[in-house]
Length: 300
Ligand SMILES: C[S@@+](CC[C@H](N)C(=O)[O-])C[C@H]1O[C@@H](n2cnc3c(N)ncnc32)[C@H](O)[C@@H]1O
Image (cartoon, rainbow, N blue to C red; front, top):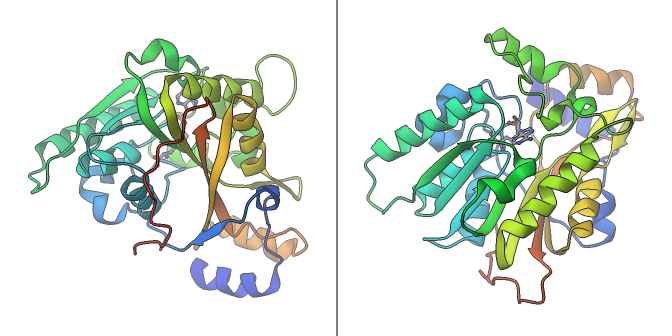
């Protein structure tokens, strides 16, 4: 089945979900093609194609170009494939990418080697890869960062078996590390998704320079026929640790897996997840937020 076509047909019949975040601030809509194979960055990242939650590479490029300057130090504490850091380094920014999964660390290392070998006209930045736990950022990092661009894990309920199956197909057990936040329930005994992410976000606050920015890309998801507004939950956590909201985007989604298409056909009353959100927030520490004068018109 042509999933894009199916989605177009679906879109016209379904009510689109709108995050509670849009009651706080208008969300500027971005529209980039879905690039499951990393688009122009494929030569550096194609070995990591099986990662189940890759960010849209054009979105990453937009954020790096508009919110950072050459020479900045960018951090992605839950970096997956390392795509944020590849784009950053190729645009002359230094970048630190962290992931807790040894396989993803191996992929980030491979990407780093490819970036280092690449001959480019413009000066490249440095890519530093760390196999580590984002809940312990203050222990992992020696220097403060200018900006964080990241997409968090989603917890155990968000994806059920899907990522696990996808990785299993290529012989990778996921999650393999007990510290992986994708393992955490939203409620219950012990560490939950919320308490784990509070540790990550408060660490992000501490490792940012005064006035630094944190940009978090996060998608709502469906559980028990209801939309979980993870973008809004994420904002509440960021607010809780001291960030202030300065800009909101929503990226239109163009691709949907086959099972999701069938699901919407079966349950047409469930709102359509048509966007992922990009929360741009600044460290609320009395210092003026860095002004990069972002060009809010997307560059295609
Ligand atoms: C949404 S994915 C990030 C994908 C990435 N933006 C990309 O484009 O490849 C979230 C990542 O968080 C990682 N993760 C989960 N728990 C972690 C932890 N405690 N510390 C560091 N990384 C963690 C997962 O292994 C996963 O790769």
